[in-house]
Figure (tube, rainbow, N blue to C red):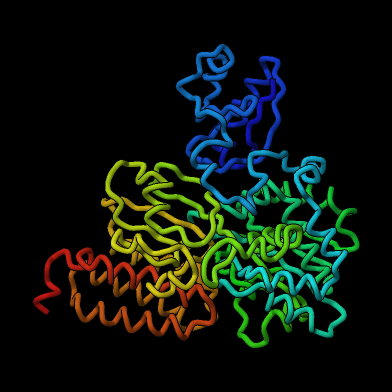
Length: 490
């Protein structure tokens, strides 16, 4: 009897190790595999394809004795949450052992790298460009253009840097890739190195991801011969949110303070150690093996408009069915929250959804018909960011959320530019005055002016994106900023 239990960090946090130990203690062999991404069901136990969850250690005997039907979810692969997805990046999720080279090769692993070596660097760059793959870390910049720029640079030394500093609240897709399918990320980095002429790559992981760090370090050692002569080194960050910004990350990699660099020069021209550098997010690089193995058009066939391929969307916050949902661009926000996510976990009405992490805009239900793609979100003053969707019910205080956005920016600012360093502090103070009912109309006008300065005057997205949650909260939830009913009288 085959028993499969995830060793993903979330599953472990929910008690998966104790469940696995109980099965093993009763004489059963347990395979620790990657996570299916149905987080509300963790720890999820799969026995001969049939799933049970969430399972506690005390449920094990009941399941083995045929008395666990109250936990049964049917065939895991056929569960509606899984069956409705289009899994390209997460095709192996729940199906393979993360550090098994045998499992990886048996499920199509290394096919993309083999084809890349066959067709050569120029054709690889052309393939990535034709696929329409855009950066999944937040900016949505076309990966092919970035790769082409580095490929055309004449320098002898070039680097591939994987930004795994996944710091946005409500996001976990990067972690799931590194913990569940690390060879896919390594393959993507090796393909990128071949394409642009880089001999070495770095994976920069936030220190708060100890499981991912251990998995990536082990995977790099196991895959070293396969990706040679390309070499990969894992580096651990010190926890600064701003190091998710590419130039701050480069400074940190070089042993300097994590502080934003002014552009130009762009990292593609002068990046790590002054050399041309490709910096891509985990999800971007993880999409590359599919693009090369199946062809650009196979990838571009999903999505809509200029948003091609699939997006691993992370459903979090006050939501009934939280987890990883990969689908082609175009699904509406309402479908994600109410249909796929099942509404709030509290059972109360959804009031707001924040997309794109702590610096993403808040969407009211009136905008739930917005398609999930880059251009559609831009049109309503939002951003997709890393694909995190955080749900709030009707008990949320949106004025407090706006205050938090300024407070977060002030705490995480590297301090290099004035709009971010000073603006965030003054913004928090001004919002606090509004909450106290002091000169509400004039202070809200001041906040709007301050946000305009931060948006267009900050050196990086930390200060530049802080206005999104603030102004969307004020625009869509004005009643929370006028508790005393004084604005109309001013």
